Amino acid sequence: MTGAALRVANCSGFYGDRVAAAREMVDGGPIDVLSGDWLAELTMLILAKNRLRDPSAGYARTFVTQMHDVMADCLDRGVKVVANAGGLAPDSCAQAVRAVAKRLGRRPVIATVTGDDLVGRLPELRAAGVTLDNLDTGEALGDRQVLTANAYLGCWGIADALARGADIVITGRVTDAALAMGPAAWHHGWARDDWDALAGACVAGHVIECGAQATGGNYAFFAEVPGLEHPGFPIAEIAADGSSVITKHPGHGGMVSVGTVTAQLLYEIGGPAYANPDVTARFDSITLTQLERDRVAITGVRGDSPPATTKVALNYLGGYRTTVSLVLTGLDIEPKAELVTRSLWAAIPGGAAAFAEVDVALLRTDHPDPATNEAAMAELRITVRDPDERKVGRALTAAVTELALSSYPGLFAGPSQTASYGVYWPALVPAPMVAAVVDVDGTRRVVEAVLPPDPPVVADVEPVALGGWPGGPTVDVPLGRLFGARSGDKGGNANVGVWARSAAAFAWLSEALTVERLQALLPDTAELTVVRHDLANLWALNFVIVGLLGEGVAASSRVDPQAKSLGEYLRAKVVAVPESLL
Image 1 (cartoon, rainbow, N blue to C red):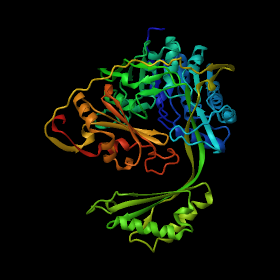
Image 2 (image 1 turned 135 degrees about the horizontal axis):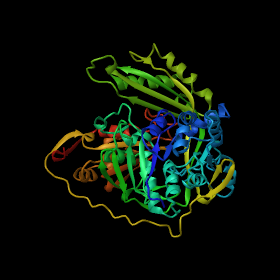
Image 3 (image 1 turned 180 degrees about the horizontal axis):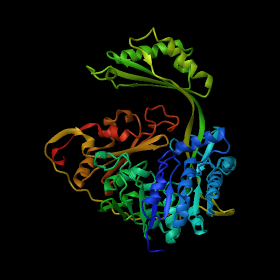
Image 4 (image 1 turned 180 degrees about the vertical axis):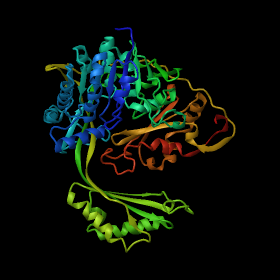
C-alpha cells in the first residue's frame, strides 16, 4: 500500500452536467484522478434511443468534448481519467477519444471496461435458470422485449486497467462508487477482501458521484452556501485505510460541510447496508468530522462482504404516452375538474377503459382571493398510456379540443405531449455469471466478479446511543426550519432522507417522525409501503417509499418523476416541535 492519499476529483454528476467542470478541476489544484459519472438509470434508455437513430451513438459525447479540453494537461501531469461515459458503447467512445488524441498529437493508453451489457446473453441466462424477476415487485419479466440490460460492474476491472498502465479508462455500466473505488484499490494495493478499506472508498465514491451536490448544490439550507451561483465540484482524498477527506479546490464556489456530505450520503439509498459488487458498506458506521473549512473527514466505515448476486438494470419500451394539461381558474375547481373529466371520457369511444392506463391528477396551485390571474389557476393533468400508438395522441387531444366551447367556464389547455416511453426493470443475476472485460490498447483480459466468502463477513457495528430531547412547550413551524432533507428515485421507488443538526433534535425526530406520521404528512404515500431506516450516527432517518414512481422515471406520470422535490415537500409541512429546539 502507498502512504499518500489519492485525490479523486469528480467533474460530472450526470449526462448534461457542466462541461467546463473538467477544465476547472484540472486547473484548480493538484489531483491524481479525474472521474465522472454520466449514467443515471434513465440515461441508459436515452442512449439506447440515440443508438436506434444512429448506430455510432450510445455514449456520452460531452465526455469526448472534455477530453479535447484537458487530455494534454492530464497526460503531462500524470492525472488518470476514469469515467463511465462509455454507456452502451465504450468501444465507440474510446475510438472517439483516440481521434481526439490523434488531433492533439498525443498517444495515451486507453482502456475500456465492458462485460456489463447482457442483452445478447439473456437467452443464455434464462436457460441457466435466471428468471430476472423484478427486484421491487417480484413480477416475472415474461416476453417483454428488452431494449437494454446492463449489470452493475464493480471496481476491479478499473483497477486492472490502471495497473496495466492505462491513462484513460472508459467503462460501461459500473457502480457509481466504483469510479473512486477502482483507482483507490489500484493506488493503495488493496486485496479483494480488504472490506473496511473498500467500504470507506465506496462511501467516498457515493459522496462525490453526483458532482456539486456534495459542495452545496440542491442543499436544504442553500442560503448558507457561498458562491452557489457556480459551485465547485468535489474531491475525495482517499487514504490507505479507506478513510477519506471530502473537499474542493480553494476559490471555487460552494462549500463542503458535515451537512452537505450528510445530504449526499442520504441520496438514493435504502437501508444502512449499502450493497456494491465488491463490498457492502455499512452506512450505520460512518463518522463525519469537520476538520476545517471545506474539509470533512469520513472515518470508521466498516464493510461486510458483498452479496452473491449482481444487480441488472433492464429497460424495455412500454408503449406510448400522451399528457394534456387543462387549466381551471377561480371558483369551484373540483366540480370543474369532475365535469371536464366526465365529458372527456364520454367523447372517447370506450372512455377511460379504451387505454391501457389512465392517470388524472388535479394540481391545486390556486389561491383564495387571488392577487393575480395566475394565482387563481389550478392544473388538471390527464395522462393516457397504451402499447398502440394509434390510441393515444390525436385520439385524446382532439377530444379535448372539441370541449373548448362546451365545458366549464374559463377552459383553456396547455401544450400536449406525446412520446414513446420506457420502463425500468431492476433484477438480479448470480455474481459469477458477470465478469468485467478489460481491454488495454487491444489486449483483453477477463476480471472475474468478487464472490462472498462462506460464511459471509458481517462487520460488528456498535449502535449509537440516543440522548434525550428537552421537553417543554411546542411551537408550530415548518419541519424544514429544523431539519434538512434530500430525496431521489430508485426505479419505481423513492427515498427521502431527513437529518438533524444536533443530537437533541435527532432524538426528537427519531421519536416523532414515524412511518405513520410521515404518511400523514405526505398523503401521497398513505396507500404505499413505507420503510424507515435509522442512521443515528448521521443524526438521520431514511424512508423508502415503495412504488411511488410506478415503473420508473421514464414511465411515471408524476409532475416530479424522479422525486427530487419530495424532501422539500416534507420540509414545508408544519409540525409542532419543542420550542427549546429552535
